[in-house]
Image 1 (cartoon, rainbow, N blue to C red):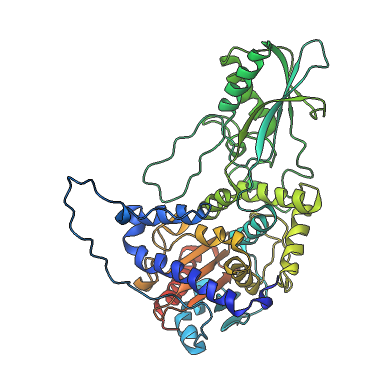
Image 2: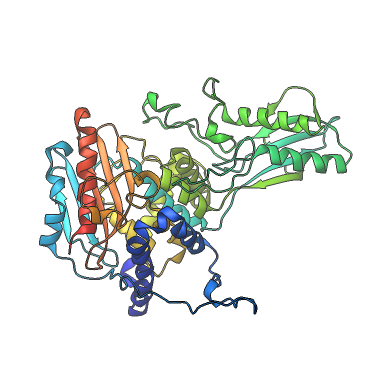
Length: 488
């Protein structure tokens, strides 16, 4: 259902949601993100809906004397995502967008999160701009819509017994976070890191099953045919590889990144298979002959499996740290789910179809990739606002992980060290996705103002002079922080 079809009951449901978001933004901003309380809360929000037991409701042992618990009063009421915003107050809050540091092409859109209009729109020149990494908001929303938040991707091994020596095939399933070996989480990190599958674990499981079947010598191959089309988009600048992105593959380890001191990985699937072969040998399975690329036959039997994080967890990570590789993998999974083809082109056909089907006109927008690295991308800020509204809609609860993934200004992810020059009230009240390329700075997300009005916004500038890049980012941050600090 499009956003115009919401009924009053849905609006009441949305008010409950935005009230929870508001408390997390305002009450949790200063303390909870530093202590870990809010991180636990977001983990519960991402979970399957089971209510955690209130510790205060657990009876103490009879020998322990516990004083009655004093419950503090609420620090704020529910936020209002449908309130009419004050246009003059918004113009005042967004005055930093007039900074010369932002260049000659600055466009913006702001409106209530539960609404269809825009209380503020600024435009000088074309109504679309290079979105940079705010593109990931669109990619992630469509992935959640088509695949569902609980979808996972399997990396498997299968055994083909048609030859004299059994042939074991490593089959890529498009897991963006598949690793060489188990990865320990970083304590105290400002970013979320899901548990990752790894080829070392897959080798151990595979070897155990092979030995149980009496197989100790195999030929080895790999199947990376799930995705199609070019591995690098033609519009990406050559110097983006390997600094920003690597060849996209349905089978890779560590996002196609080489080990320290090694040259860039030209064939990620072959590199992943090499790591798997080493791990398999360590488990007592002998590999003979050359490793070959081949499509797994339908007659092959399953041997081992490792499973990726869920789409919701992948979205959480890629939005928080602006992970280009994970976004491009999701774009191909989108293409497979909707168009039957895991390519750049199929993914973008699916994106446009889903947006249009949900009542979001493209407004002249054109997207070529999932990460926003393409400088040929063009996006209208109103499209980003409408995508955020779709994610907040009571009609689509499966999209809620997009909102919970947005970094909190001054505390988490790519905003952990930002918005420290503008209005202090903006810190903790703004959640946003950043977008940065040479000459481009953008922010898109949600903010709660001091009157409890919950709004969606997109601020974009794509003609920033190189010498002004840092000052432009500060001006953009100040404008977004102003939304949190205003009485709009």
